[in-house]
Structures are given as structure tokens and as C-alpha cells.
Image 1: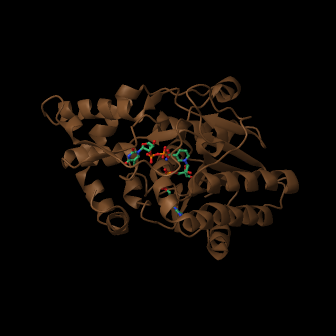
Image 2: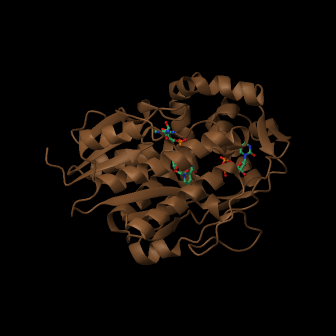
Image 3: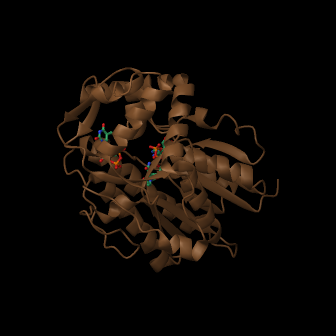
Length: 352
Ligand code: NAD
Ligand code: TYD
């Protein structure tokens, strides 16, 4: 078929990537969406069964750390654009195994940049969109917000690897004229998130009446964004963002961990018809994460002002629909937990 654009979405089988792939496949029949994913513990093709037969969707099992895999995908699909999400994404894992994060997030991104640069030598329009995190900006105190001008100050191996990849992406724009765009987003939540991150881990533990490990005093603050809102922002930036620019994406929705957990526990009590306060009894304060960033909060006014995007899901509704999704999909949780994840997690953390 004669597609207008042929987009390589890396990490399309993961949490955010699967929402981006579905959205682009459904809304842009004139674009070919090639999901390029090596399927680590976090990649799951079950996330995309509803669209896998669409004529404008293709899956390519490949590793961004292997230049020959990327070359094969370019040759097979004549890739015109990249939306790059593939990464190691969990801070706790980056503390246990920093080099894996350097390999995937830094070297993998460099490999993609190199492939884009060497393949896109024609007059056609191209775009290399790098999906990144607000964690590159470091940690805030009680006041203030990250803007696009905030100096980088990453403090975990995860955020340092993402900061490195952002710098590489910008360097390919400034040095070689590669048409890049970057976005830095706050914490996402919603269906298909691997149950190692706060919200799905706690939902799953509450269902099983297992302890809820709250790091430190639970006072750290995160700005939560519903994953579909992020996918929409990515679509808008991909289509209309200005080459060379960076856009912050956030939820205008700050919660301290402990208040969020209390809200989650109370919704879970209702959904599971448990007595009020039952789930909160599972809260267990544990040793703080090493180097735990205190607060992240995003000023995303540039994106609203220039491209007209703002978050639309209110948190109570988004959390309720996330809980519904996990309760309605116990097999999804079973499947991801019984993979390499389970062994890894129990070896590193004990039986939480
Ligand atoms: P995820 O861990 O759920 O998914 C990552 C995906 O990348 C998986 O499908 C995995 O198989 C794939 N992958 C990993 N290594 C690969 C490799 N070497 N080659 C090919 N594929 C590989 O991650 P996520 O939470 O969906 O995050 C996606 C992106 O968004 C990441 O770049 C992350 O830094 C960024 N981000 C995430 C959040 C968040 O809250 N989750 C917030 C802001 C930005
Ligand atoms: P997480 O979902 O890992 O995202 P990030 O570290 O990228 O912000 O964690 C969100 C917050 O919840 C963070 O402050 C750490 C905290 N947390 C816990 O208290 N207990 C847990 O078991 C996890 C996974 C996170």
C-alpha cells in the first residue's frame, strides 16, 4: 500500500507505546505503524491484540542495541519517521543494574539516530521524535515547576540515561540537521502498566492482600497523567511540533505518594466490597529508595499555548478506570508476573 508516512514506533509493546500504537493505527489509516520491540519483561503483544490485524500495522521484533536489526526494519518498511519510546523505564531497576540502562537508553538511542541519519538522505519530510521524562530535570522542593528551560540535573541512573539520550538527540539536530523533536513527560498511569510501578503494583498487592511497600515516609510528590492523555500529546507533537523544539507534558495533578495511596486504598475497598480502611491496613513503610527524588511537577503551558494540548482526564475517574481495567484483566497480570519479571523481582527484592 502507498502509505503517506511509514513510522517506526520503538517500544510499541510496552505501556505507553501500546497506547501510542493503537491511537496512531486507528486514527491514521494513511500511516503505516511499525511496532519495533524486542519484548523484554515489559513488552507484551497482548496489549495490542485488538489492532494487530489492521492493514496499517506491522510488528518487527528487533533490538535497538543491534544496529543490524534497525537496518533490517528500515529496509523492510522504508521508514520515514521514528517515534522512539523503547527504554528501560523503572528507577528501582536502574539502581540494581545501571549498565542495562546505559546500553538500552543511551546506546540504543544512538543506534537509532545513526540509522535515521544514514537512511534519510532524500528530500522527503522526516521526523525523529524522542519520548523522554521529566526526571531529567532532577528534583524539586515544595515550590516551583519544571519548564523547558530548567537545566538538566538527573540523579538516578534511569534519569541520567534518559538525559544522555536527550542530549544525543539534540546533538544530531544541531550537528547534522536531523529533524528531531523531544517531549519530557511526568508520571503516567493507566491500563497495561507493568506491576512494578507504584499504581499497578499496589492494585495487585491489595487484591492479594499483600503489604504495600511505601518508600520512606511517603511524602514524595509526583504529577500523574493518564496514559491516553500522553498518547494524545505525542500524536499532536508528532504531527505539529516544531523541529528542534522540546515540549513538557504533565497532568497538573500533584499527589504525595501517601495521599495517592490512601485514595487508591479507599477506591479499592469500595470496588472489592471490603470494609472501609481494610486496604490501608496493608500499608507498610519500608527503607527509602536510594537517592529518591522528592518532587516532580511540570509546567506544560508551552504545549497548551503553541499546540493547544492539555490533559483532559480527571484523576479520580482515571484512577477508577485503571482499577477497573486491572480487576477485569487478572490473566494479563498473571501472564506478565509469571515471566522473567517474577524471578527477577523475587531475587532482587524478596517476596514482596
Ligand atoms: P515500558 O517499560 O512499559 O516499555 C518499554 C518497552 O520498550 C517494552 O515494550 C520493551 O520490550 C521495549 N524495549 C526495551 N528495550 C528494548 C530494546 N533494546 N529494543 C527494543 N525494544 C526494547 O516503558 P513505558 O513506561 O511505556 O515508557 C515508554 C517511554 O516513555 C520510555 O522511553 C520512558 O522513559 C518514557 N516515559 C515514561 C513515563 C512513565 O511514567 N512510564 C513517563 C515519561 C516518559
Ligand atoms: P514509580 O512508579 O516507580 O515511578 P518514578 O520513580 O519514576 O516516579 O514510583 C512513583 C513513586 O512511588 C516514587 O516516589 C517511588 C514511590 N514508590 C513506593 O513508595 N513504593 C513502591 O513500591 C514503588 C514502586 C514506588
